[in-house]
Length: 162
Image (tube, rainbow, N blue to C red; front, side):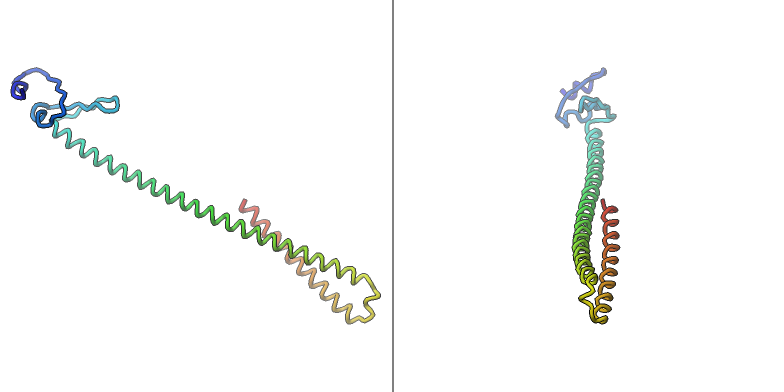
């Protein structure tokens, strides 16, 4: 049959999956794929060689694409790690603010108690006790002022994080 087809002078359209049969019979191959037709010059083996090269290029493209996905996955991991680090930092600042607020409350309570003590002249017959208490009172006020400054800095950090 192959020899009879070779002797024919006209145009033939041959549909076959037999590569050996098609070898030498064809000078063009049409590929029908994904509702598209593509023309290849040469016989079946030229077509297969070209497709193999094209397949290798597709494989390389997939590797590049998957490499991009790897980069994307790495970026996602990095973003996740950064997010977790930000959450840890946020928690840390919130804890520091909470401790600072507790310390401020404690200092304010001590200062109120000292105010009451210093307001009662009966308790200070000795000026030494008054001077000692006055120094302690000033020290507590300074400590309260420092703690409030620290609290403000922490709140500024918290606002920047949000």
